[in-house]
Image (cartoon, helix red, strand yellow):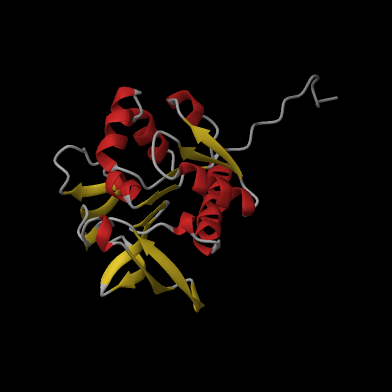
Amino acid sequence: MKIGVLALQGAFREHAALLRRCGAEPSEIRLPEELAGVDGLVVPGGESTTMWKLIVLYGFEKPLLDLAGMDIPFFGTCAGAILLAGRHNDSETEALGIIDISVSRNAYGRQIDSRETNITLSFSPQEPFNALFIRAPVIDETGPDVTVLARYRGKPVLVRQDTVLAATFHPELTEDERIHRYFLGMCTAAAISRTRAVPAPCPSFSHSVIP
């Protein structure tokens, strides 16, 4: 699988390293034309306002929306989740509206309030996942088509809508591969679905079959 990692700012190298351990082929994306041919895209954690300014500067907004319209899976973590959200409270950042959630930026507090805690993943409940929250946003509301995959203190922290996955914490900063493997499963399923949606070409004949 060729998985793009938006490499404008933030923890893109950590995502790429974890994807590589999972057997994927990560591709660091710095220009819109490099999105061609990816089977999925990770939007990493970082500083959402800075990331948005770079998205606008390099002309990424329409290509990202076009990619989402092609049902290419997205995975946004922390700031990435803010950028993918339908609504948020960051006045300096637009919402791409790729997933139907409402997000409050830095809602857990500032850097000193960062924390790590165990959460339960609905798709892998046997072992807790050690989640790292760093200046984390809070998902305040989820739309009717959004599935909550994990919660912390009653709030959703890992959610999915169709081909979009969003986390308010940083799974790329752990050694636990389960969430990234889950995302790669989404990418595989989406690629198979796209292949089936393409009609088979009609056979061509170099000569008539009628004697």
